[in-house]
Image 1: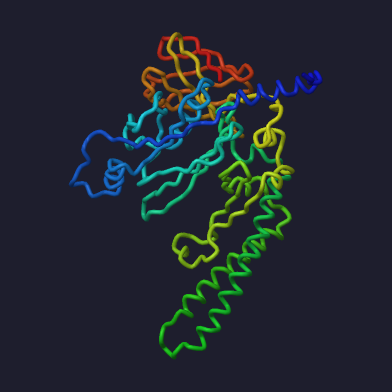
Image 2: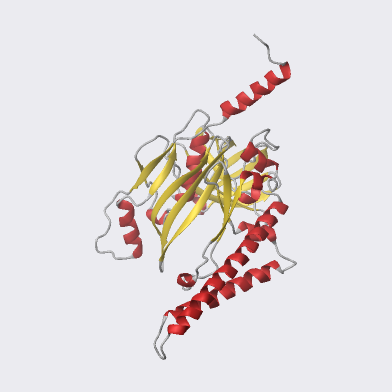
Length: 396
């Protein structure tokens, strides 16, 4: 038998080790279950929405927990963002809303369903389609993306270089200009035909077409003015784009329609989407983005402790804590729960370098305070409530 060269054998072993660490998740559906009867005499929008929930209109994703704990971390992240509570610890067909409906992130949502996207051990992506109702009802899609090796959620701005972000924004603008020009050409041709057949003082399709032309001209002008603006903030504009990762072949970026809700029926172009293959995207990615999309060595630091559920203890009580990245004004928000109760407690505070001070919004006598110090990807410190003090330690 011919032996492999030592270097090639080592590379194969490293590749196999990386592949073994990657987890492809099994995703199932869990229907939201409400307890307590809905008031039949209450005809409010909120009552109508809760009645929809009771009929099974909210269907949540659930990743089957594996050996690494990554699936459980993603579940908690999704459930906190979509419902406002941690995910169930074990698989099942339903999920019970264990917090008050008014405290749920679902307030105003009449239905929810999801579509699984990329799920290959590199990236886990999912698109959530919700119908939100207030003065009117409208569907909107939210995309969630996770590093499949850690369970940490990532935003588009975290994986593209500043130049890459600017490139996407400008490409979308150039595409939008062409779309509006093509639409205006078509609408003006329609208007010319309609005017030939219009009878005096008789409303016709020409009036509607003229309104569409005016809207598309306004939208075209807005895009052209952006393209000519030398002081654009591309990072800010990129932050308004939605990114979808439907497969392991590429991504798409979407800009919301130009029209407001009242003009929506006249907006023939609508949302603008730019599709890019992985190879087209490669040159726009930073090192972390290249790692996520193509694999290889993880760039340092290996795992920032923000935007991800950290697990540890207050005293001897197991907890999970998620801290958002500090803002430019050094403010911080967070949420934590005890494993035993799994009820979220909101926190807010300030950051001073690696030191964080977080407090709950409860009455002063019941308020909790965390004094934490970051140590790499972990936090240690003290928890205070009244005269009680306990050590805290949490890590990925």
